[in-house]
Length: 222
Ligand code: FES
Image (cartoon, rainbow, N blue to C red; front, top):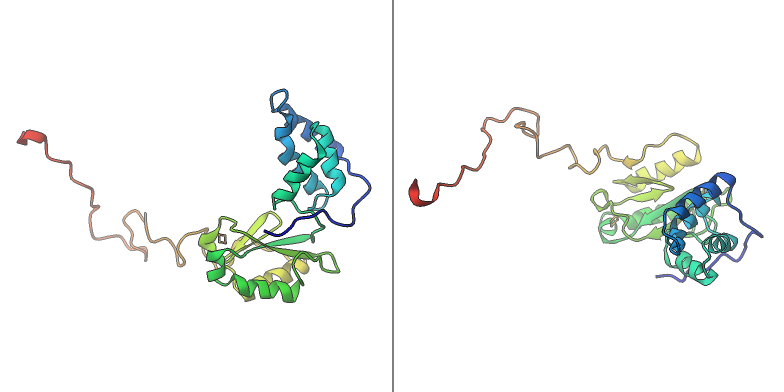
């Protein structure tokens, strides 16, 4: 695991917007008296969303103050969980899964696309549009290889479809999350092969009756 440090350039202060402050206070109320620190992760997450996708140091202090926590405790949480970005990210933040199933299915080629189109990891492009990071399994291994861009998953990628996706995002074109090869969700490629209600994979009715298990014979032969 890489060392995670706060960014060297920090804003002077952080304040929740009025709407987020109201939301944060409601989150805190969900926890019993004395357990308000349990709201630390949702508050940090909301702070990150408000601050263009990354957590500045003053946001950690603001959350620590709101929850009456020692600053170091909040710092530990923010630096432990990789869901928290400690440096600026692009308008489109690409998290590329490099874990074994995605690796076996071509994640390295997608990384090459990232390096060529975006640049090195954790560097924001000059126009502020992209940054990328290799991450561990994102739980969509069936559709490997895949990336998460902001809150959406893009799956069943090839180097070509991934590069086209980045081009479309840069040009402001509409893109569709999910499988990029026509597959429906995580169904088998080419369509479902089971639970077809008597139809075979080509859609024809099955000639065979359903094969339900016969009830077991009664004990004692009666
Ligand atoms: S290994 Fe890539 S999503 Fe699980």
